[in-house]
Image (cartoon, rainbow over all chains, first blue to last red; front, side, top):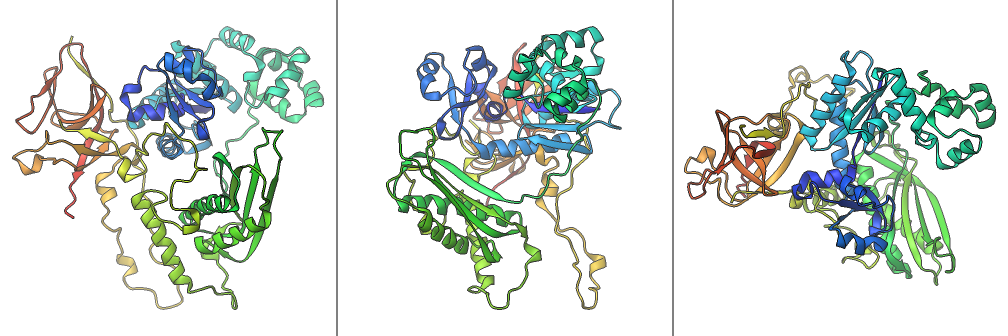
Length: 424
Length: 148
């Protein structure tokens, strides 16, 4: 048996943990640069606010209805996600973290009454983290997803749906009324094709002859159908592979034109990426950067370019990596374009312990450099990100910084931002 | 009907372990005679954080928890270690939600009566009436006052 657990309206729910006054109110969270709506509370959904709606088109409507908007606070969401995943991991030795707000749990040999277990999961996550979850339980991953969907849609399940416990008639009824596009792994394009072939509902799909599907759509769809019929084809992937690369990229709050400003952005992202690199005790074997204009403005001149440079000696030194990145930028930069996004990539990662000494290439005192970098990290941890950095990253809030007009504090990851308890 | 509590209760689960530095690496010399005797270092996390997933920090603002009894006194600016996994009991110090704010108070619970008490006599207790729900956000496990 497999459980699929996910947090309801994850980003909005994270905000609510630290702002009790949001409970019962329509709340939305916006994407980077406050662009689109990426999470909605039940109350916001009830107002008819669609997912992915551009915020600037909605802000008037939102004001009229008292909708509260937040910029995305990924530091908070990442921390709350870890907490949820760790709580869930206490209940099963097999866990596949599937995304920031959902995971599969293997229930083999775990408590016999699975619905009861689902309710215990729900209670525990709620009490320990303040986040509401739904649980779907079934013999296959695809059915567990389906059961989770039912648990979410239908309040009578109290957030936990065990597929096998439903009467056969009810299962058939669910499948017959559910759109084929709701099935895990079936994207929009595929669902259009399926409907052209007369497969409209989950029941239609489950009843389709396997061999025919394989020939027409390939083996992946054949497996999905087998899973819908209770035959497990997809294993739990418990081990997440080591991070092979660290990417740090952002869209700018407004377009930038000069190489100087691009250099600031690249240096800022690189400092962040290098910090992550040191956090996981790795060295980078290569550095890459990219810059590009906004492809959604086809009337403006377009330019995009990227470059990756292998290092003679793997490094985690912010100073050294920055110098290389800025040299690459000088090569890639062309004037006369409105740059919309840039990014930095550290790849060919290897554990720090596996470093090969290089006879001729020792940089300036490596121990002092390591101390310097460790000090940078310590200061930024203590005083908040960006408290200290290289001058080439700029020293004031740049024009290209993300628009985050509705950003909440980093309640769980920064000392100056921790919440206040009144003693009044 | 009596007033009732909602908010964190203990769940059954086993403790998780903290990652600790690996003691004793492979080396070519004579093995350290102390290696057999090494123990885990005393660790504030292990002592005060039983449920890392459920532990959060708050800063105290105000003097309603300042007491003449130094053991019970929580000064303005103190750092609270709050564990949501603990079940709130009578006499616990809790972070509760009062009028949509986080408030730190001592929980009084006797014969179905609930109240939130201040340590400082200048502040009146908050007594919950029938049908009134008290949301406990978390239980204060310890607090830290920085000396410098």
